[in-house]
Length: 238
Image 1: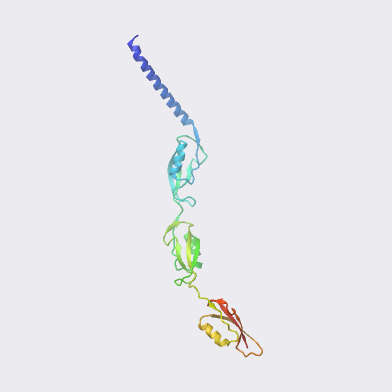
Image 2: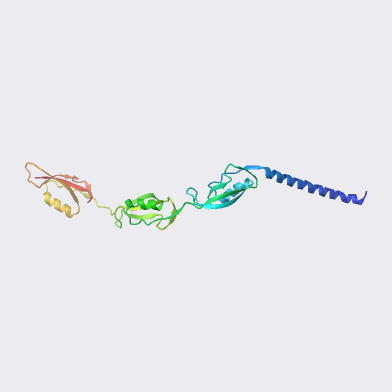
């Protein structure tokens, strides 16, 4: 047999294999170009998470912008193109816009201000009242703001809740109400006022057999626990 014939056989086999693999590659590319897939919902996901999910569907991703968003925190996807549920060909690109978080505002200084007067400042600053706590202290008058969180000048998102610690003033001492019945009203009233107790309504009524100016009724009654801010009322003979 001719030597040339033996050399031609491997050559023919090599050519055949090349044509076979080339045909397979072209067939695969043609198939891939025509195959469709469904775009997943990427809203609320971070970029890397969306990238991995799209890779599984033979799609790619590109960031096309940033935008302030009230719902999604910084780094989350807020918009995609094509939208979720769309049918697109494999190897296509999905464009996304990422959130920069909420609009930022500076927290005002509320320390030392009356809690009853801060509503307008909160509204103008784009903030809201959060948790409210109270504590007794001699350092601040009752109703004054002692502390806040977040702190003043801190940058936070719009509609952030601000927590406050409110003073209830100094703890008032409590006293046992003494028995005032039968005592002279003039002397008792002077003594109560001297000790900074509040004497309110004094009613004068006729009481047969008793000289005028004697206490015949009192409120609070004997033994009742009171503070200096409580009102004391008396009924006195005339």
